[in-house]
Image (spheres, rainbow, N blue to C red):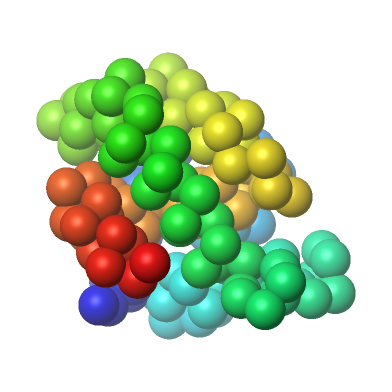
Length: 138
């Protein structure tokens, strides 16, 4: 499954997203990686932590698996928020709430920049596809 955002997608979401240094860095990294969210995520994490491994899997894989369990099995409210964001993309309060929830639920070394990349990836593929796609990775 592609994890690339087009330049117009990046520009669109960058305008909607709450502005802070971590999220600006996330968008810059996505642009540097030609819209490839997974590569940008791994590079940003590596820059901050000197590794992209978490045990024998990449942090990206572990993060998606943890989030699938939290969003798809337990947390209908977070899933609803993500669906709501797709309908109301200019609601920065929804974006902030989702990012905070992801950081809290994941209990992995994430900051708002890394969480931004995850939310963008989920928005790109859609929450229902995310749940089905990552479930098949188990």
